[in-house]
Image 1 (cartoon, helix red, strand yellow):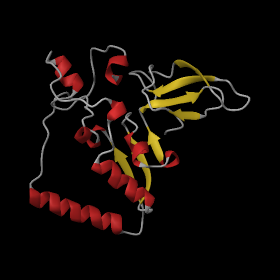
Image 2 (tube, rainbow, N blue to C red):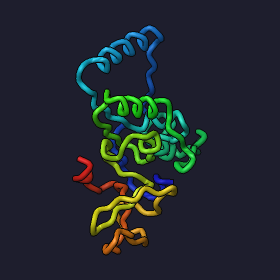
Image 3 (cartoon, rainbow, N blue to C red):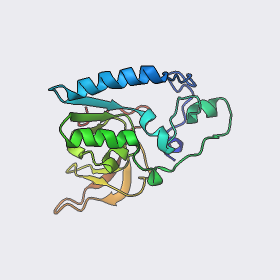
Image 4 (cartoon, helix red, strand yellow):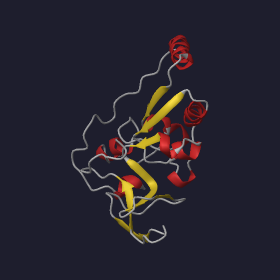
Length: 190
């Protein structure tokens, strides 16, 4: 999938295979109480997400103990069941974030994920920054119109996809909306 379309890179950056830590039930309850108090407060919250919220639905991460890059570096087979992005559904966490946004308790979502699950959960595009892009999005290089597809776009690194914009009078080239290793974070998402 997406990982295979990235340029090969020897040094992947970050720590691979870091252990995961789990809180005991009492710690989780205490942290949930604190979070609920923050959310119940008068100010809306800014939500920042990463790969961990999609692993529950079978979307693999890259650097976790069973992450794609971790296993590849160890020359181990990818043993976790993978859900292709096209078949992944939003997790409970995605839906909770969408609900917070819908009731005004969340004011913006910033995601490092490229799986489009925030959009599928109902978060408005105008309230979402996808820092690393979206495997299902194409943008017109001329008028900047965005198209969200029901299939993964075949390219990465903001390259032409072979399709054209259908906005009246435009016909500009569509490019993918996914970063590769050396791509800068997109200004419009920042």
